[in-house]
Image (tube, rainbow, N blue to C red; front, side):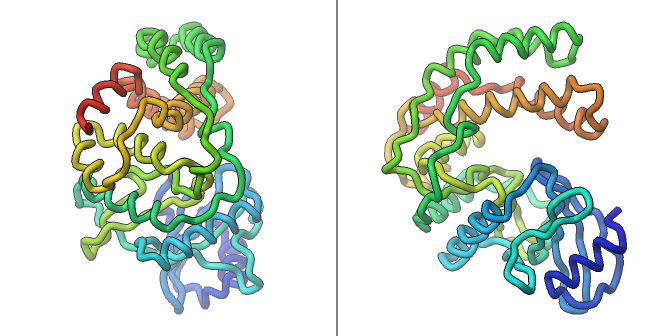
Length: 307
């Protein structure tokens, strides 16, 4: 639970008003836990970071969010502290606040058309990139690290060791498609547009969540990642986006992110000192990713579908 001391600090620093009930644990994402906080001024989402957060990075993603909101992209607005900061330091992690948005838990996942149209709207914002594309989104894991992961999984008798071994050659091979980013095409992108982060509200509208991962990327590479995410719905998503024809190299970001995610989930799942929640979550993610990994054959099929 979020302690009374932390709750009082958050409400005071962000000027949220008087607390009318204790914070309620609402959800967990890859980058943080979310608490619902009600005050006499409204309802707020308090996000507790699970990874280190620099204020400058948080300020940069808020600038992108505000530019997107001004362009008509639906999102829960971020809240700054009374002295203009985005984050405050709690006893264990950085905290930040957003306006609360009520999501419809019974709603189906957004359609490929809805996701494609929202991604196009995000890219039309044209928010400048604050620097080069980071390694997580641009550099492949590489043969040696793939083989190290497979060997560690086999030694540990992990439930996902056999699927990883079965796809190992394909995962190594698809890394060869990765090409360096083209600096002239890089803008600020959300970098995590998918059915988990684009949700229906109780009013029926779509809303874009989880902006903390945003940063420099090439729009066509983010489109390629989305098309892989939606699978057979890709032609509809591509038509709604109406972007240029894709090439195999446009999957560079999706390939790099796949490798880094598998690597980090594998390390967590195999770490006996990791919290049980993290190990279970990582194992579930690995099971899902290794059931449908991004491969050269998958890219060829997807390009055939959308062209």
